[in-house]
Amino acid sequence: MKSVKLLGVLMLVAAMMLSLAACSSGSETTAAATTAAAGETTASQTEATTATQALEGQVIVDGSGTVYPLMANIAEEYMVNEQPDVSVQVGRAGSSAGFKKFIPGETDLSDASRKIKDTEVEELAAQGLTMDQDVMEIKLALDGLTIVINKDNDWATEMTKEEVLSMFVSGAYKSDDVVLWSDIRPEWPSEEIHFYGPNENHGTYEFFYENLLEEQPLVTTANLQQEYSTLVDLVSKDKNAIAYFGYGYYASNTDKLTAVKVDFGNGPVEPTLDTIGEDLPYAPFTRPVFTYVNLQHAQEKPEVLDYAMYVVSPDGAPRLAGENGFAPYPDDVYAAYYQQLEALK
Image 1: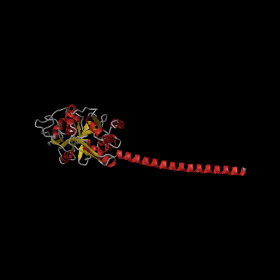
Image 2: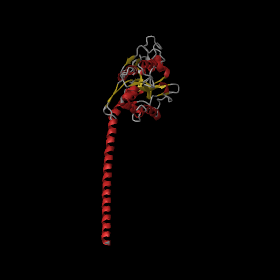
Image 3: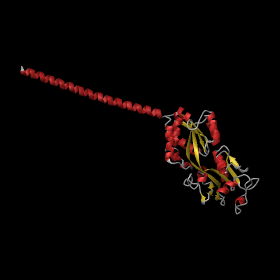
Image 4: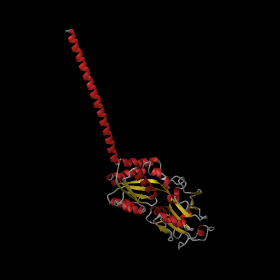
């Protein structure tokens, strides 16, 4: 009888062990299935995130011809490296012409080589837009207004600030504005100076006329052009030419032009990325360049906000400004803009 009871106990223990083994096997299967499911979920979430980040659409930018090379370079990098399905179209109508498109909402960003004017702010208000709330001003970089002459001109390579500016003022030397080099300095050639510059559509013209000439009338003989490439070509073919425009256009054409070293009172200063700056030797001819963002568009269209953030990201203006002839601002300036834009998400 005892043996029967013992046998029963042994059989009961064996059954319990088989049951535990089965449970253990089931647990392992369930864990494996759970892990696999989790993996699928993670992959699915990653794909969803990637899909969310992939943008498409158009971003329209227009405005300053001076800023154009920098903004076009940023746009190219963005489309190649960040969002290939977003088309960023960058124009160069000029600062003033750009604002005329930006104010009624025809563009998303407006580049400018001068600060937006009070009259333009009033026009924005008439459209129901206010600065700060609806429009964001971004200082992209610093530019040095550069005075250029022909490569064969070996006499006017250095001038004082007063000489440079006075020769561009109507009536300063001759009532008919036919000014000779010898009128500036007697030892220079008795040949007529040919003046060139950007036309009234450009912020560079306005900066030169309003800030440097202090709204004294420009010489009537000046040949004003819409395209900076045209100015480069004209000066490169004219021994008696003198012109002004942003440093970037000179920097990319040093084989064709000579930059005049300007004496602001402490000796001649050549415009370079090391001298252009608000507290540097070329400061009197230094100016900020801007882009303005329509924040309503940025909130309505993710591609506009994403591009605006890229412009001030480390891969945008901070990295590409120098490559395009502009002195970049400190990193914290761009970081503050980035945070402002990121808050719109």
